[in-house]
Image 1: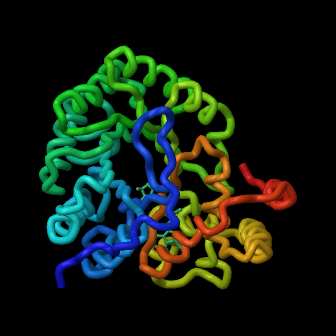
Image 2: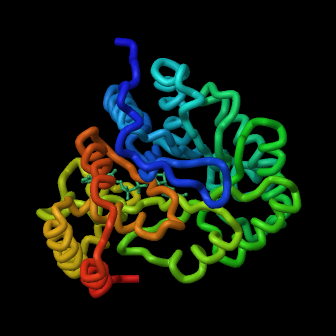
Length: 329
Ligand code: NDP
């Protein structure tokens, strides 16, 4: 059945300005790191993407090596994009990245101009796109001059293959340097993509201040701590979960102590009339410098649960204190 996007797709979803740029992003964005490789049914992938767009999620985030295997998330997304979303291209913000291991040899990893620009061409081909909206340096490369890595991003923008430049997981100091270099090149830093959740608060120690000063936005990845900040693990480790499948969530993180912590958070969420996932997302969005939270979902049900977070984004001081009381760094 050919897809027609829901008429009411621009409803409750807030769209937040990315730093001091002209681009606004949905408060909740969808990432394709897991759940979009060749190990997952394409029809589930299609259903998640359609549902997301129908509910106002205009931003899909990818990277060259998302899968498994590497590249397959971009291929699968490209296939679904061509069938369902091509006519909505101008309503979508699609991002990709390069910086981690992608192909063998010295040119398929880290931050050289050689790697970044070749990888962007490959990503565009896999997705069948003329351009991405945001192209990221996926991580800082200590052995490549920052000028070279930022130069590759600025070139991608000048050549029209990307509209904006982003960086991911750079320290506050490197972020400041990257922003200055990009500014000199006439391509401002649009956005930083760091990890951030109630269980991982490193960006509060300097990075958010730098981003505010530089006028760049912040899109927080793994705001649900890969599922730990949901009800997924409250009664054991389900067989089909990320933790059980030997993926990126190390089951040893699910210790009795951290589960006790998660249960206490779950009780606070319950008192707010929210699921734990919804409270975790609202919490990550409580600082207006956080432009968007970048979630993953393995089903439409999870996605729906998460998108309902926008129904209650405010916190009172008592709730924040109760959450902080149990904070783990
Ligand atoms: P999350 O913290 O949102 O974790 C997503 C996982 O949590 C899902 O796959 C699912 O696990 C579980 N989950 C989600 N919603 C619910 C719910 N409502 N109830 C129960 N369980 C739920 O984010 P991710 O770690 O997936 O990362 C999100 C995106 O961030 C990535 O796709 C990618 O785009 C980006 N990212 C970027 C990185 C970078 O270096 N720049 C690194 C990591 C991520 P299950 O599969 O078990 O069902």
